[in-house]
Amino acid sequence: MYEYHTLPNGVKIILSRTASRVVYSGVYINVGSRDEAGADEGMAHFIEHSLFKGTEHRRAYHILNRIDGVGGELNAFTTKEETALYASSLPQHLDRCLELFADILFHSTFPEAEIEKEKDVVLEEINSYSDSPAELIYDQFEELAFEGHPLAHNILGSKRNVKHFTPDRIRRHLQSHYTPSRMVVTVAGDVRFDRLVELCQRYFGHYDNHPSTVDRSSKPVFHTFERHVNRHTHQTHLLLGCEAPDIYSREKTAFTLLNNILGGPAMNSRLGVAVRERHGFCYSIESQYVPFSDTGLFYIYAGVDHDAQQHTRRLIAAELERIATTALTERQLRHAQQQFIGQMAINNDLGLNEMQSIGKAALNFDHVDTLEEMNADIMSLTPADLMAAAQRYLQPERFSTLVYSN
Image (spheres, one colour):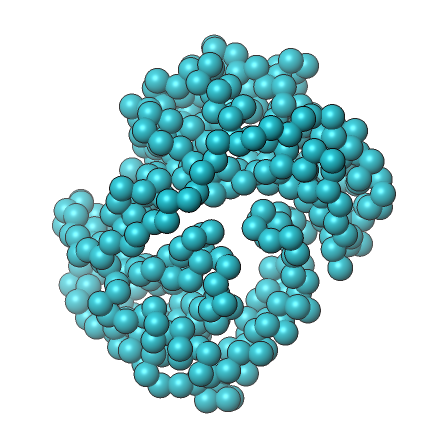
């Protein structure tokens, strides 16, 4: 059961009250890397870093020590469509977490000396991705798939852009994009809702909402391609992908279950059994479904021996054809549904995961589904629902391929 409240300035508040000894709190902002253009590409991620570098009330060290100093943890991340600040703490320290979130969001000063140091940190983060082909391949795939659209560019931005970021540019981007009505305060833990609302009103309620320049009216177009990149790697990195349902699609639930059947985290996924267990071609093979607000992506990634690439691709193609042409039996469907329901329960039993999932959901919907509601949606699916989604999206001509190998 979730409790909701919206402050007069538009900040939404959502609480999942649990008996945990730890409180997980966060602020989710509906701004991400797709809301940048040109020389500002990479700005959302850089702002996420720079928010910890000093405010009108605190220096960088005091920000880091505010939560960590009482045994908590403070962190943040940026995606294509959101920025999040979050913390884990004891219940008695929720007050300081929320106060700190508000301080760094509304009072950061972006000291020039700290910004210059943080540029080096982000440049090294970009270097680390370049040294990790299993991560880099996803970014390059998206650049090719959404070429010409803001969803295409890397969340980290380019080295050239990062080197030219200034405190003034950071402030302008923050003021034009980050507004209270695009923020959700989300908490999971043993907290009274009236106290949470009181704290949020105290720390977030007196900031005026203002129009945001975020514009997502340009719908992305998915481009198909086949690309081989020569890299000195010890194995072939293979990524296949296609467009998938967006976050509002009726087919999202069916496709989520399809993804779990094909290449989810369980060792009995179809791709895992076909490629790893039967043939031993890889250590890692998985699929991912990432829904955005107006499109989605489905990926299959495998790291395989160079000589096994073609055989692996044939095995993957066979599994995609099978799931699109052969309906699951009622028994197979029930097994897949029960497996996925169990995975969701285990995932949500971790308070940090639950806090993050309800924060993301609240950015896109006025209602956050409970586990019981999600379970009902999963159990309502039929073999025909899954086959219809597979036949619509998982056709060979819809897939693009990116390969890293010698």
